[in-house]
Length: 376
Image (tube, rainbow, N blue to C red; front, side):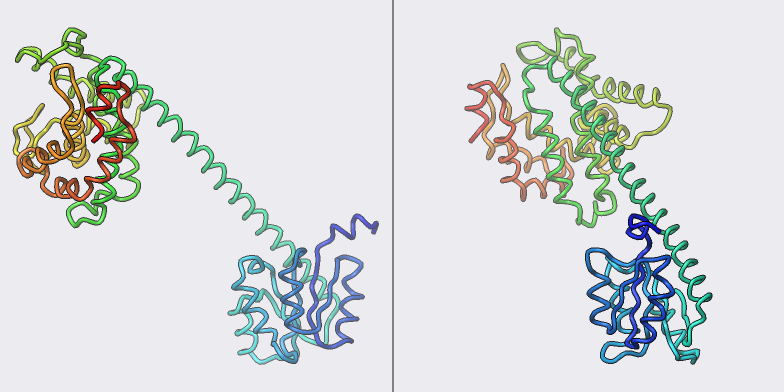
């Protein structure tokens, strides 16, 4: 064999305190493999965990100091060496010794004195098995990385699409400013706070909280379908105009449903987005719209958004009103506990007032006068 071939040959670590055994195995294996020798357990662990780890280990059971069984235990608990096949070399022939070794993770036994042909065949067989296992592990790692990469791409596309649609609604209602972003983070804060609450723990698992966060910006998407004369009116709406404005919940739900129909399958984050768009104006006591739902008949996503949406509306300046200070807005929310809003969600809001104020400051609207009114 040439020098390059030897360098690429599988590496066999022979661990035996007997010099004769070392020499015999070294002479037998060197024509086919790179061979490294160790005469005790401590040296074996050093070599096996070194920079160039062996592909297979021939390990004597009975040695001074650390036994082969002890070496095997340590190798199998180390993630860097646990997949290296170990063949025990032993003069022991008791069934319990063989069983013990296999339980510890050895792949085979070779009994002394050695039969050269048996030694070569067993090493070759286990190296082939290891190569197959390495290939499958490498392939699985590659596939996991590829799935993670593609999932990240899909998530990024979803987020960009959601924000593009939400921004479209925002450009049609120039008074909303950063309303979409604030309500998104208000909902996240409430959901994270309530994740261990007995009423909500079953619904607010990590994946659902993620869906809530990414779906929240679409809650007002239906405003795209409201005529400019109503949506952009610089003042309060007439009762007739208000009835038209109320249709934004249905328009939003239907627009998202059409998008989902176009995909030909149910999409979890669009399901949550539909709930928020359609039901965020429902009220706990049944006085909301479009369906006058009562209590827990209102989807949890919409109940969370209801608190976030009303709080932000109270805190935001409009042509016809000034922005309300936090203390007054919070008092309004608390006064509507059990009337407009889920009582437990209001209780969470009370505990999160500092977080809500921080979110309001982070996403303050850009108009200087509105900024002065919004930030306390």
